[in-house]
Length: 505
Ligand code: UN1
Image (cartoon, rainbow, N blue to C red; front, top):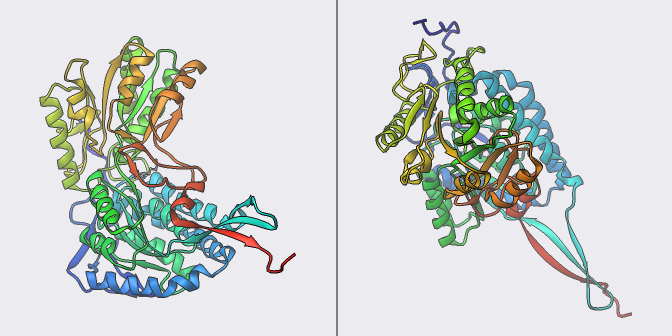
C-alpha cells in the first residue's frame, strides 16, 4: 500500500471572525465560534464569537433604516456597486479559493472556480438596470395605459448553506440588492470566513451603511430572523428539514419565502449513449465537491445492455482520482465538511447495505482508495458506488430514497427507456436530472416525462448559469425559483398603475 501524499503547506494563521452590522465590523457578543479545516484535525481556519438575537435585532434595525434610501437609489447605481464588488472578488480569487478549500473542503480548483463564479453572478446582476423593468398593457378605456412596475420587497433575510459558501450567497444577495432590497444574512456556521469575504467585497465596493448585514452564529438566529416583524421576505438554501420548518414559520407570519432544499438526482444512461462522455460526466456529477451539492448525481440508472461496461469504466476512472487535502492542487476530491457529516453518511450507507444495497466500489468504512491510504481525519470518505438490486424493495432502500449529501452513488439497472424514466421519477424530489443518449426521440420524450426543475442532456446533473431559472420540481423547492428573470419574481412585487393624463380632453 502506498502512503497518502505528504502535505507540504504550512498551517496558516487563524482569521478573526467579525459580524457586519450597520456598516461596522463588530465582534459578536455570544459564545465562542470557530470554523475548522475538515482535512486537518485541530486546524482552526477562523475564530470569533457568535452573534446573538440582540445582534439580529440590531441588524434588522440597520436594514430597515437603510431600506428606503436604497430602494430609491437608481438600479444602475446599485448595479455599479455589484460590479466593483465583482472586481474585488476576482482580485482575491486565488487567496479566497484557498481559504474556501481549507474551510469547506472542496478541491482547490473548485474553490477558486467558485469564487470566480460568485464574481460572474455579481456581474450578471450588475447589468439589471439595462433589462426590462416592467410591462405596459393597453387599456379598454380611452386615454389610459396600464403599467406594471416593480418594487423591492423591503428587508430580506438570507440563510445560506455550507456547500457553496460564496456562490450561493452571491446568487441570493446580488439580486436582492440590485432590485433594491436591504439584507440580513446568516450563513452556515461552518463557513463564516467566506461569508465575511463576500461582505468585505461589497463593503469595499461602497455599499451604503445598513444595506447588507452579516451575522455569524447558530441556526437559532435564522428562527429569530424569520420571526422579526420587520422582515419582508426570506430566501433559504439548505436541508429539507430546516427549509420546511422555516417555510411553515414564514407562511404563518405571511412572509414570502423561497426555499431551495433537497435532491436525489438521477443520471440516466441509455444504451445508445456515448459511454466515455457519460462516464466523465457522471463522475463529475457524483463526486465533485465530495457529492455535497443539491444538484449532485446520487442515483444512476443504467440500461441493462451497457450497465456492466459502464461500471467497469467508471471504476477505472475513479481509481485515478486522488483523495486528500484539498489545498494540494493534485487532489481531485477532499473530505466532506465535517466529521459529523461523514458519520451521518456512514450511518446512512450502512443502513442501505443492511437492507440489500450491494457495494460495488469503495465503501464508507474503507480506509483506502485505489490502494492508497485515506488521510487520517474522519471527514474523509472513499468514493462509493452501491447497486440497489431490482426487487420489490428497491424503492424503499435508503440508497434510493435518502439524500446522503456525500460521495455515494446508487445505481439500478433499467430495462427500457420508459423503465429508466419511471425510475428517475420515483423520488419525492425533482431538482435536476442528467440524460445520456444520442437519440433525439429519447431526448424529446425525456423533456416531457422527466419531472425535474433542471434537465441536463449529455452533461452532469450539477451546474447552473446565472441568467436562467434555477430550482426544483416536487419537494425540492418551495416558492419562486432563483436566478435569471425568476429572481425578479421573488425579490420584487408588482404595482399595477392605471395611468391617465390629468386634463379633460
Ligand atoms: C451547482 O449545481 O453548481 O445547494 C449549484 C446547492 C445548489 C446549487 C448548485 N443550490 O447545491
